[in-house]
Length: 383
Image (cartoon, rainbow, N blue to C red; front, side, top):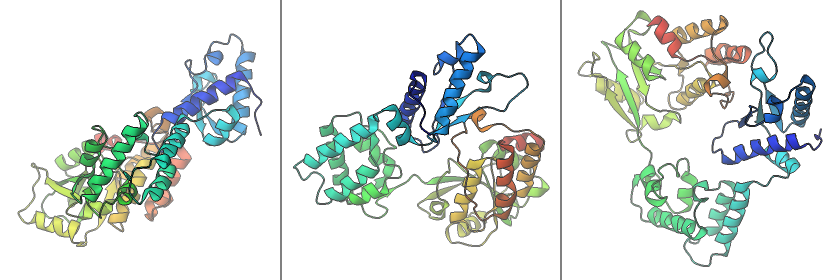
């Protein structure tokens, strides 16, 4: 269904598309229909006018290009009091209807044309493959500089790749892209196309803070520092024989943890580790010695995604039932928070990971309740 042209719809559609243009996140893009974005609705003096604007928004949502969101209804609340928002589902469909030209698409098209016309050998014999890559994965960090300066960045990057000199990838990025250290994150294909060798540019090692006490017979990864510290300070029966591990900032594949180049061990000074514990831990971490592994984190989509990622490097990792059962009980009592109230609306539903408790109990509970709950709710109430 194609919505009728209306100045109000065209305006909010353009605002949503502009927000998507500026976003560099893979998460959902939403526009809050507050007084700033939709003053017409908020300043309307009669109910019929508000109803008209709402009918227009519903017509736009019926197109399938966007989705309307409202917070949970409470008694006597109006539509405007339920924090309405538009979520973008189909950028191109909405852009075609609103006759919106993506700023990024225009820049990328012109930059690729400039590179095709460039006659020097600054990009080497692999130029066609490089252009194909940039066409499907634009290097937005170059968008705000002159094309000639952008070409110089790519040329310098190629020279450093061909030099075979090793360094951390973020150091390389900062040297080439005017001090910006994150431009080359997840750009291994680009580096390869420019001549980099395997493992020539390394990622920052994952820092693993461990707390050992007496003899341990299993490993428990804890997502958040507050909960990790509480559990390490106050040992209880459920985790008295656990090697507690906090992986600072971990969000990617756990395979990197299992390499001595990919991770670093740090021992919590107030723990009761024995002299031989480092050898035992390194044997488990780097030489694949067997120890059962569990994970405890926020009860939300991102937490379950971390569990899935850990299972890539530590097959068989399970959700830690004592902690998750307590969080699940709180959700079942109606506690927790909506994703939008904690800036988590961009989290996407994870695929089943193979842990039966996560797949059959925790994920269905999240979908049914529509709420999340942070790990610290358990920490402050139980430890």
